[in-house]
Length: 201
Ligand code: TYD
Image (cartoon, rainbow, N blue to C red; front, side, top):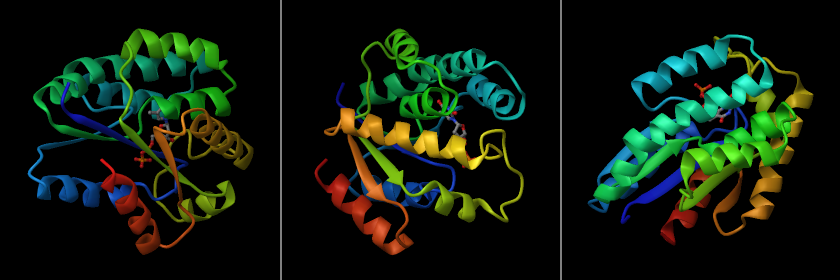
């Protein structure tokens, strides 16, 4: 595979969406074809699963399985074909979110999630993951006043604290792939960090 796979992660309200368009422009400016996508979702079936998993109450195991079911479709029909073509794939969230939200947030054992990860990804991992880190209280404050919230955004602060901790634990485990940015800074400062981290690619 000759493409490049980049994922963005972080708490709801971490501000990652702001930097997606910049990344797209940066790689297109270098003459690369860029596929912008997201999880859960990224395929017609995945988007239907997204609507369900973000809005309907379900058992935590079901939630994890739906996330990985949508991911399987995404990897098979969008991500791998794009990487085979040599495209740059930029995904708003990928499996680190499952380890953070379903693992840290809901308390599912990492070992179980790793089984699903092996099954669904067959070794595929992002080349670079940007983790927009910030205190959960700051992220919560940024979410205030946003219109409709989903099931995850409505969780208590303690849930988001565990999600953040699980993200950071994952970054400590895969320091080469997952680069942590200080998402509490202003947009300009965060953009500068993003630019510096992708320069190496
Ligand atoms: P998000 O990507 O933040 O979309 P929006 O910006 O439209 O709110 O929302 C997706 C939610 O799904 C987010 O709260 C995290 C959650 N999620 C998981 O719990 N597990 C996963 O594996 C993924 C990909 C997302």
